[in-house]
Length: 205
Image 1 (cartoon, rainbow, N blue to C red):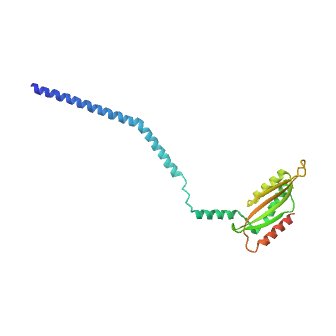
Image 2 (spheres, rainbow, N blue to C red):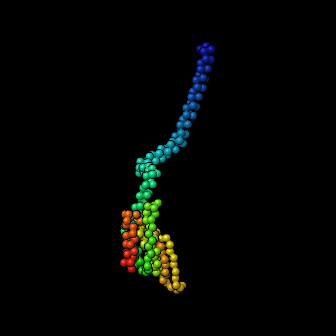
Image 3 (cartoon, one colour):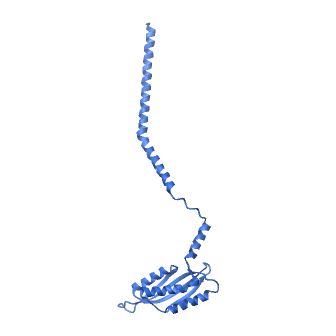
C-alpha cells in the first residue's frame, strides 16, 4: 500500500473512532436522563393521576347541587315559613288550656290572668300578651316556663319578676309575661276570640 493511501486510512479510522465515542456519550446521557425522569418524575405523576381519579370519584358520588333560588323566591319561602310557625288566632282558647295544664303538671299556682290583644299591621300578625301572677318553688316555676314554651312554640317569655316574703320562704311569687304570636283570624272574629280566651281562663280557674 502506498503511503498516501495508508495515511488516509489511518485518518478515516481515527475519525470513525471519534464519532463512535461521541455517539456513545450522547446515548449514555440520554439513558441517564430517561432513568432520572423514570425515578423522579414518574412517582409524582402517578400520585397526581391518583389524586385526580379520587377527585372525579368524589364529584360523581356527591349529591347534585341545590337549585339556585332567586332572592325574591327565597324571601317568599321565609315569609311562608314564618306564618306557618305562628299559632291560629281562631283557637286562642287552646293557649289558655296549655297554660293551666302546665301549671297543674308542675304544681304552680296561677292567680288572675291578664290578656292584652294587639295587631301588627305591617307584619300582618296578631299578638296576645299574657301576664301570669304565679306562686311556687323556683324549680317549679322554671319547669312551668319550659313546659309552656315547649307546648306553645309560638310563644315568647318576655319578662320574669320574682318576689319572696322572707329569706326562709321556699314559695316564690312571680309575674310572668308571655307574648303569643298568631296568624290573623277571619275579619269580625277578633272580639269573639278575645272573649273566648278570657272565658277559657275563667273556666280553668
